[in-house]
Image (cartoon, rainbow, N blue to C red; front, side):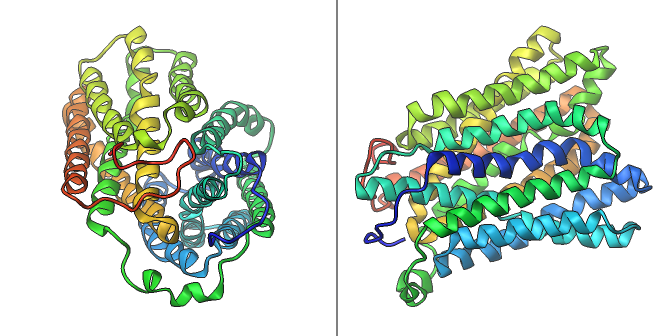
Length: 412
């Protein structure tokens, strides 16, 4: 959007609904999609192969589609197209059988779904900056993003009850409906946001490379490594806890505690911090992750586990918020979607590699495998420090107009 755009600001309610619909799919897909695959008669190796494909496809789509959205100046339009593609892919899954057709549909789903979150982030951040430029009522990214975490928590809790009442084939149709809601809300956003002038395609900034690619790349990989250090927890924690004699109810409480503290962080603490603390948030996320995984390696008891799960607000929430703010500001308004795409692509590859490796690490080292997760977080922290040094040496971004929560050079 150009500085001269005078369209009414997007409402916080609409953007919060968009974020909630985007993340609701995660709350259903993550716990219940493997159940649907098993119900369709796929074997464990086939399910594993299907689970391994999406990160690679998302890598490609996140490197291709967000830059196109930047060049067209129509981020909500691209978001709407991707969400509609995801809805169609989920619907196709409900109509087909067999490993290869399902694998093909999952690949199409991953390609369409991969850029949805970075495009939604870019749309929200564009609105945050536009309001700041035009002196309108402030909009806080962290508060809007918090409704995404709240949506995941709600769908994990309520979705289990709902899936239990419905036939197994309803899972993909629920997911298709969620993606359709995202499409409808994105369509409403597209009607309110003015498309950038056609001349933007010939803009020298967009015709050339993204500004500060090394620094943006370092920050993206740093955040991706810190987030990938959660892989062992995501894949094997429930199995470990059950083997230690914890009940299914307590295991559910442990997972809910992590998502709940993350939600509270985004809704309550994130808006107070603002993006002037972006680098501090990213470094805090990496540092707390190291401590968390070292404690996990020591085989803590049930009560200590609950406290460690509550650190998810820092290890995931602070890392995510810091990275999104940093990349948004460094890339500037014309390359915001592309920078978020880089972050998503780096995260997909890192998490896929860490998840694949966690199987071997779990078998060979048990709880001590968390030491390797601590090493991943340490590597991410070191890369973030390296990127910060580049900025300190003079590679500073051009500051955007401020409205209370903008990233300042001194905040770096």
